[in-house]
Amino acid sequence: MDNVVTIFVLPAVFGLAALAMAALSIISFRNTQRWRAEGVTVEGEVTGFVKRDLPSRDDIDERDDRVQKYSPILSFVAADGKSYQVTASACEPEGTYTLGQHLPVRYLPSSPEKAD
Image 1 (cartoon, rainbow, N blue to C red):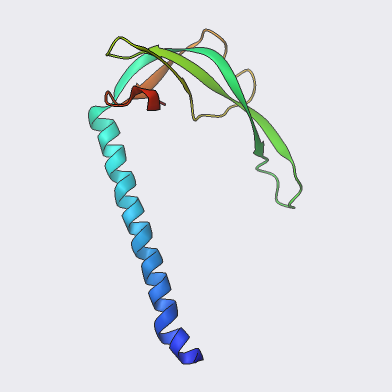
Image 2 (cartoon, rainbow, N blue to C red; image 1 turned 120 degrees about the vertical axis):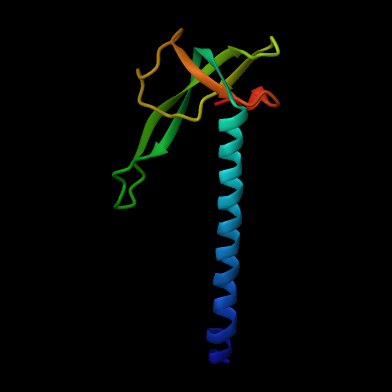
């Protein structure tokens, strides 16, 4: 039974995992290409912040150290003339961004509500 697992099951599991990772890589690459080709960049304004408690990078001894970082909330007007508000994926220490600061916002015209 151990030989069957070693010879057939483990290679099949690792092969499927490799195929899944390759598929995800292709999807990610296509999304990146689409953002580069179709993405529009406009100026957004910082209108608020979302506080995020993140694990510390120095947390190697498994203590529950947390670091507070902030993501700016950005308001912008898309090419369709509508106003949108999004929370940026970037997280930075407090004071990195200020209210009223202008930052670039990139979005796909088909879904400006998913800007970043």
